[in-house]
Image 1 (cartoon, helix red, strand yellow):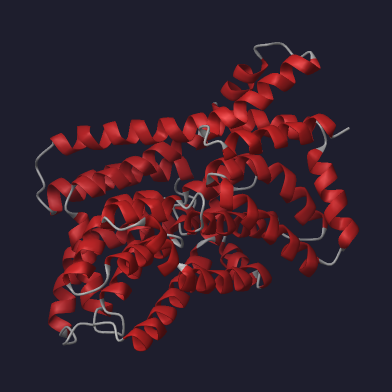
Image 2 (cartoon, one colour):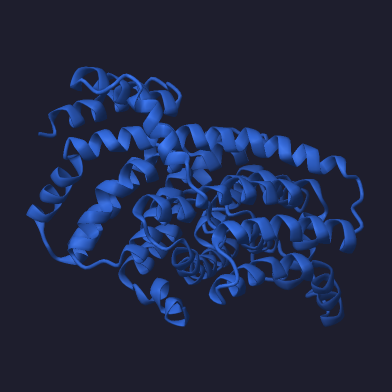
Length: 426
């Protein structure tokens, strides 16, 4: 039953290994399947349009727009200054500032790559100026951006909710505590690395008055994730409405609070958003067609049967699923992997009693780790480009952080209350 589906998978792997664009590598096997199986030739296009016809999906370009607006405005500097005053004196200094800044920024933009693109240059240049090696600065920037995509608002969790038909609000809230735990692990790990390597830190702890001053300047930006979480907890708006509110709020504080009146940045941010959204949408549409082929051919059932034949113990099943997702993340863009693997993996996890909301946090975090590993490693490539460092040097420096993040993944996987306890307040 799954023969054609497995052939489609092998064809995709072959095309992807030849560096064919991901959306083409996904769409070509699906189109050939339509031809071989006698499906109407318009089937791929119709399926793509149906998948993309979603009100909730509008949240994605809106949150991307938020990240672009922040990048072109003056919010980034305010966030950086506040983080520097709060944690800059700890072991690792600006590396710690990097991690905290990334969490705050991604708590507004919802994307790892938007995080690096938005604040990466400020963080990396500041670290290099302070005496940090460029490859280490890029590695910290890549690793710190990993926690962001599970902290609300999270573009990958929104996608997962649409595909798995799970409450997006529940997913966004479920990611908050795991993201904070991950940041804590990263900061503790950085402190150990700093002690071992003798990395610099701020020579003086910022005074309370200075912290209060930088907090007051950054407060409007820091308030953004609070507004989002409170609004969704209180049922005031849906994720899409939350994204629209965030766009309006960022424009408001840029113009009224920070007096950034060069309105051309609005157009520049919109242009960047269209380019980024176009890439995500075409991958999402192609992956949805490919995922349909796998579902029709029973690849999801084959996966479930294979995994459950090894063990029906949730602990073992979660280990196997994590290994599969980590392997997929080595080669596949997280968005494409999420669309393709969600219909395959989630039924297996729910069969052994894993909550689908918890499963979503596990899946997204797994696939974000793929942004740090070769040969794909998009976060590392982007950070290396910003730092003007050889990419393989940055990959080497990322090894310690991959271990730290793998430990965080284990805790998130095997302690469901971390994800689910906040949902009790819904």
